[in-house]
Length: 153
Image (cartoon, rainbow, N blue to C red):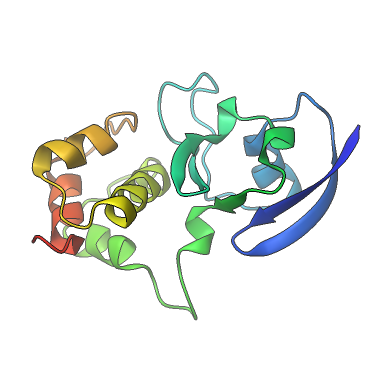
């Protein structure tokens, strides 16, 4: 076991972790941040996407010990003062949510894109969410929601 410090959603946690524990395990099982979904556990579905130092990463493939001294953002960290992030609002307004399982990963992938490129093309949006699988919506409404938040509308 190793003691590490994790900064998640601007809050610091001191934890003893096994070198084999994934960030997904820590977030869901130890910090009770269950918005990060456990999907395939193989890095194929994107349900566990979080943002680490501004970059979308798969929590199921990231060891917790690799995240020391990094800024981690989960879906729970997007709302501020009880108000949803514009991407969360847009997902609801554009009916881009059906079962909701992929939504946290989609929203975080989109946030990382818009933070880097506030006016992405549709192709850039598609590339940014390519690692996030959705079995319900067909992606059109998800892309529309992201476009509606981009500064290029």
